[in-house]
Every structure is written in C-alpha cells, then in structure tokens.
Length: 476
Picture: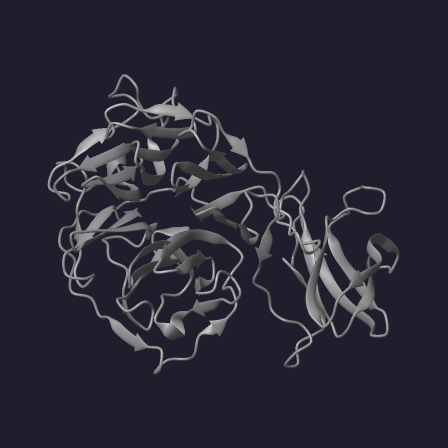
C-alpha cells in the first residue's frame, strides 16, 4: 500500500551520470516462469491484447485472458523486488522495481528502487538500467509516463526525473522554478503521473502540477490556491479519462499537512482549473475506465460510477463462482476494464469478472504441493498474524495449501501444542482431483475465541489418501 514516507537529509543535483546497463534476450536467459508472480497486484496495464500485471514478486502477463500466465523475473532482465511502477504502450514496456533495505542514514528499513527495465519488442528482450536519483532514501519510481519520447518517473524521495535518451541518463526536474530540495519542498516529492489532452500532470505531496510543454513550465493546483480545490495535497494516483462527452482528470487526493485537508477522490473537467471531491474519507490507490464507467480501487474496496462520480456503487466481497475461494482482504490496489470485462488487483490475488461482479474468477500465486519433492501441504502466511494478515470482516486469515490426487473428501482440523483440538475448518468436504486447493482459518477456536500466540498443528485428512500434517505459528 502506498503511504506517506519519512524523509531524511538529501542533496540537490542536476544531470545524473551515465549508468551501466545490462541487456537480456529470452533466448539467452532462463525461460519464463509459468503462473502469476505474486498475490499483491499493484498495477494492471494492457496493450495489443496482452494484459500486464505488476506484482510484489515480479511482472506477469497473460495473452489469453487468464487461461495461462507468464512471469518475468531478474533472470529475464527485471530488477529485484516488487514492481513499483509500470508503463505499457504498444510494444514498449517500462518496469520500475523496488525493495526494502537498510541505508547508511537510517537503522530502519526504507524503500529503495532497484532500477528500470525496458522492452521495445513486447517483452522478447529487456535492457535494465540502475535506479537514477541523488539519494538512496525512499528513492523508487512509483509511476512512469512517456511524452514525445521523454521518459518521466515519479520517484518521491528522488523527485520528478526525466530521461531524453531512453533511460540512459536522467535529470531531476522539479515541477516548479526552485532548486530540488524534497526536505523542505513538498512539491518536490513526486508520486504519480498521467498524460491527457497534450498535458503532463504530476502528483506530489503538494498537489497536482500541470505542464503543456513537456516539463519546461508548470502550474500547481493545491488545496489552498483554488476556490474549488482538491481534497488533500498528497496525490497518490492520477488518471485521465477521455470520452465523447468530456475529458476528466481524476486524482487520489490524500490528507497531507493541512488541518482542513481530507482523504477523497478529486476530479476536474476543465484541465485542473477547478475540482469536485467525492468518496470522502476513502484512501484511493488507482483508477480504471471502461468508456464512461469509472472504477476506483480503494482501501475499503472497489467503487464504480456510471455517471462520472455523481453516484457510486461499492462491489461486495469477491468470491470465486466455481469454488469456495474468495479474496480475504477488502483493500483493492488496481483495476482495468474494457467492453464489460473487469480485472481487479488486491493484496490477496487477482480477480476477473465478465458480468459486472455477479461472478468472479480468482487467480492466485502459490507453490504447488506434492510435486518435485515438495510437501503435500504448507501454510501461508507463516508466521500468521490474525490482526494484520488477510483482513476481512474483522478477522485475519491463513491459508492451508494442499493437493488432491483424485476426487476425494477432506477434513481439516487445527490442534494446539498439547494436541488438543482447537478448530475444525471443514469436515468431509468434497474436492475434485487431481487439483490444488487452499482452505482458510481465521485464528479462532470452535467457540469463536481468538487463539493465543504460539505454534499450532493442522491435519488434512484426505479420503483414501491418508493424513497430512502442517504447522503454523500465530503471532499478534
């Protein structure tokens, strides 16, 4: 989840030095990993019928609407860590990656960019460039845009940065006339980008900045310099919607430092000159459009509007139509829609609906069990915190992953360290096979009480296939 970050002492700089780069071709590197890379889906983009997914463990794509997935990792030319920013247009893909690390100026783990990977042939070959910027502190690219051949990245700690030579060299380019100083100037902490009607928009910790000349000059719209302003100055996401009726700039405008600021979604239909706010108190992360339909991915779920934000509908919890699988987190982080098909990215997997949310298909990354010497079951996340992991309906949830060899019935029970029965997850439930399954436990006993911290054992009894044991640690 995107959050306001702590800034330490930084230095000013102009043009970055030439950077070493590495080029990869799929025929020369390891073959693509099959399946979805990770269950945290931060971004979804589409080009030429291919859907691309930025995840917490790499970049994935599907060319067949979700029937199969392929994943790009460092072996194929991506940077290490999670995908923090993604740009897709035609055959051009630009992927920004990041990881958490200790730095010399702090004893806390802070986010650090691990570079940008560029493909100009739809993913067949990649060139990786080190992370640009003048500081290692919270310097990661949260958004990427390209305008007239100029690559722009919003790097928060590193500021707004541009490259005019295909990511080889970079220049810190604040969206104002001041020398770069993110310590003292909130407008230099860049977080989001979008392009529309010939304008480049950059969201910072001090509002929305607009340029009509590709970054030479800027105008700033913030919570205090307009009669109808954005709700809050920390703009975590921007998106441009173009229909036959109108052009709309959408902003996820979070509360920053002003006492009268508030979390909401802000929109402008006149290029930023005035704004209307909606979905008050919602922390928005991303936008998607299907013609005139607007989707907003928020902490409390996915919202939809068919009238440009006059009214909103909140989708109910996502459940798979063909199984007992569901998304155990209300937070949504990304979305993409076209011609009635909607994809939603969450912290607990990826989901697709073709009928406006009446039925869903859930896709999730997992390590297969019972193959290549792997155990028949495991628990994740492990250790498990019921107050933090997979929160839904006031409970956390841990998954017990397992596989079946044939059609069978399954019983799953949880025991404490003294081997006393704590909870029964399911009893004699039918499961098809061979197949992979996961069932969940909410960290409560059969009486509804939260269990104490400690080690718990679980047993999966498969009819005609024996009992399979696993272990999970509960930590609050």
